Length: 235
Ligand code: SAM
Image (tube, rainbow, N blue to C red; front, side, top):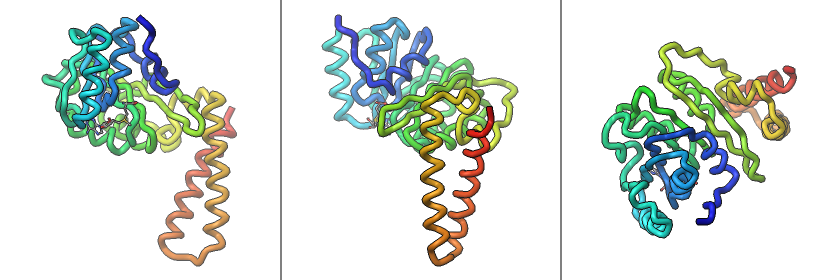
């Protein structure tokens, strides 16, 4: 059987799955991720959860074409509703959505997450929102990675529940506690680009007529620029 090809982003998500007895991929779309996890032996079985019926049909035929019906259960439903009992999935992946939708799914489905469950989250935007939710809900970020799929750069966050959770700083919430300490080249590329963008925004704001809304935006952009520069200047 040919290896199922994943984009670099999904390949990085896959690499974060370690020996799962039941993987739940929420918003699975085509179900390529659970298929590869089964194929690689990273998951013994999987749930492909999807809220729309159209991709669900596509997943079902993809899974059948591989002969994986006995390993992957395709379930139609909203977020973590597809998980039947707390802890049914020892690994939950939510990838390819905005940070707000990811945190909304987690918040509404909290009771379906087991004590030992590992979360692997890949927000397309608003990563800070996801980290903030994790930090406020007893989760520790145990790994992070960053992937360049030009023009997009994606961050992937792995977390576990712990009794004592260290409060993350504003900088860590924004840039990632692990990513900001490793400072890999893709990370530097992302934040140098954002730094330039903020400089442009602040220049434009300084030339515009001042309103309360613009003053708020200016303060916010200055704060973000300060955090980025603080991080980029640290060794
Ligand atoms: N996870 C795949 C990936 O990373 O390539 C697919 C990402 S796709 C952009 C987002 C998928 O999430 C869509 O198929 C969408 O229908 C599904 N989705 C959106 N909201 C959802 C929800 N509340 N519950 C389950 N699936 C959802």
